[in-house]
Image 1: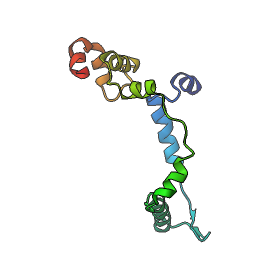
Image 2: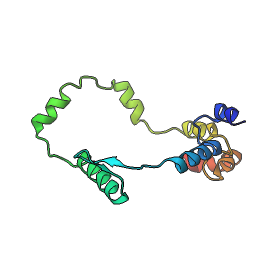
Image 3: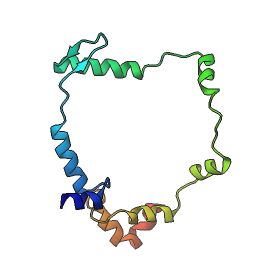
Image 4: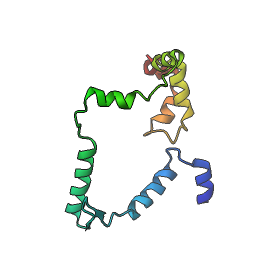
Length: 130
């Protein structure tokens, strides 16, 4: 039965996917990390420090010079065609919102609202798409 559920549900936001994720989460453990010096650290505090330092360094601005930025961006020659830019900047149409709502399975939608929106779309649709 599990394989049938997986084939049917796949990666959709379903109860089956969340159950599989919960089992996986329960089994996932980080037992240790290598620090910048190559030393193995297995205490929670040390691992937290390694992770914090890594992401702090990753997301800290080094205040690059304009010339450095140009070196990187000069190689980027592809730009979006004007037609695609207009499409991406266009406002959502009511029909797009309706299609997105009805593409969701009524009982797999977030919370209990999925079935509600399907059943009462004639009443709530105009206010949702306004």
